[in-house]
Amino acid sequence: MRKMSAARSGRVKIGDLPEDLLQRVVSLLSARQTVQTSALSRRWRHLWRSAPLLRIVPDEGFQTVRGLNEFVKHLLLLRDGAAPLDACVINFYCCEFDSYQYPSSDEPDVGLWLRHAVSRGAQLIRVEVYVEDEPVCLPDLPFVSNHLRVLDLRLVEIKDSLVDFSGCPSLEHPKFQGGFINARRISSPSVKHLIIDGSGFNRKFRTRISTPVLLCSKACEGMPLLVTASVNLDHECRDHCANTEFGDCGDPECDDCDVMVSDGDGCVLLQGLSGATTLELTTESRVFMFRRDLMWCPIFSKLKTLLVNEWFMTSNMSGLACLLEHSPIVEKLTLQLSKEPRNFVEIEDSDKPCKQAFLFKNLNIVEIKCQEGDERVKKILKILSQNGIPLAKINVLQTKRRPRHI
Image (cartoon, rainbow, N blue to C red; front, side, top):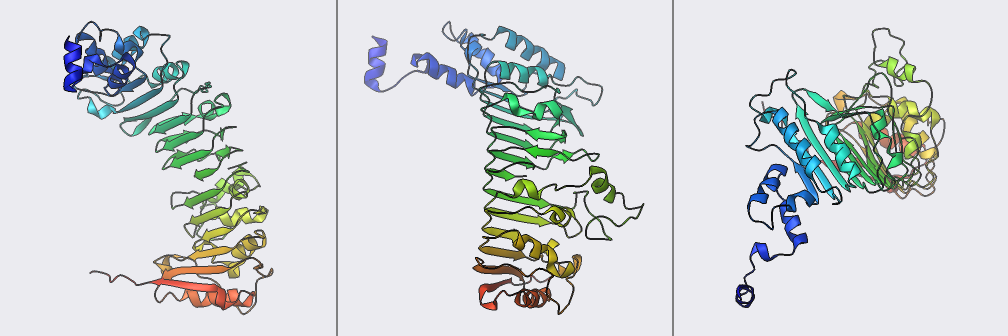
C-alpha cells in the first residue's frame, strides 16, 4: 500500500531503488562512508561489498596512515570476490594526517590496493598520492589485465616493469602527471592517447617510448599511426649547451653535453614523430635535442602542418631547411618567435642560400608569429626568399608589445 501511494504521489524513496542503482549511489562515497551505509538497514548491510567503484580517500575517521592501511586491507578482504570492480580511485596527500611525519611514518599500501583493483578487472585506475617531497614508489611489477582501459598516475614514482603494458591489451589512455618515471622504456601495443605532463626522468639514461598504434601524444620510438603531436622541451631538459648547437662543445665543465654522449648515436625524438600529419616542435634555444636529431632526420611522409620556434635560427636556418627537405607534402609552416628576442641565439646574416634549397612544391603558406619590431623577421624573410619561397606565400602576424611597468 505504501509503495502504491508513493508511486501515485510521484515520490520514490532511495530504499525503493533497484540494487544496481543503490550500488552506484554507494560508489559516490569514500570507502569508509561506503562501509558505514551497512548500518542504515538490513537491505543496505552488504551493498558496500559489491560497490563497482572503490574510492580510497582520507576523511575525519583516520588519524594515521597506518589506520587507513588497516581499514583498506580488511575492506578488500571482505569485499565480494565475485563482484566486478569498474574503477579504483586513490587520492590523498599524507600531510592531511595530523600525526604524519616523513620519513618515519608508515607509507600508504598503494601497491596492495592497485593489485586488488587489477585482479578484480578494474577498467579505470587513478592514483594521486603525495608524501612530502618524495613520491610514493609503486611496486616494480607489470600490470596484467584484459580489462584496464584508463590509467592515470599522479605524483608517484614508476619503475621499468610497471610501464611495460604488453599485458594490458585494452589499455588505450595512460596518463602520467608529476612524479618520477624511472624506467628505460614505456611500451604498449594498444595505447592510442598518451599524456606525460610535468614528470621527472632519470638523468643517467633516456626513457624510450614505443607505442605503435599511438594516435595522439602530448609528450618515442615507434608510433606509425600518430596523427598529432606537440612536443615542448623547456629549460629543465638537460640536453642543452650554451657553447654549441649540437651539445658537442667538449668542455669538461659542461655536464649536460655528457647526456648526449653517454646515450650513443641515434635519433631520440624525431623518428618516433615521423608519422604525424600535424607537428609542433618548440624548445628553449639552448636545448639541442631537435637540432641533434636532424643528423639522423627521418622522412615525414605524412606531415602537412609544421610549427617550430627559435631553435631553427642557427646556421643560416639549415635546421629548418633539413626539416622541409624531409617533409615532401608539407602545406603550412608556422615560425613562432618569442617575446624576448635577446634571450635567443641570433640567426646568421648571410647572402648565401642554404646548402639545400627549401622544397616548397606543396607549401601554400608560411606564417611568422612575432611581436612588433622584431628585427629577426627581416633576416628570416631574406633567407626564405633566397631559397625560393615567394613573399606572396608569407604572412607576418605581429602582436603589439606590452609596455613594461617599472
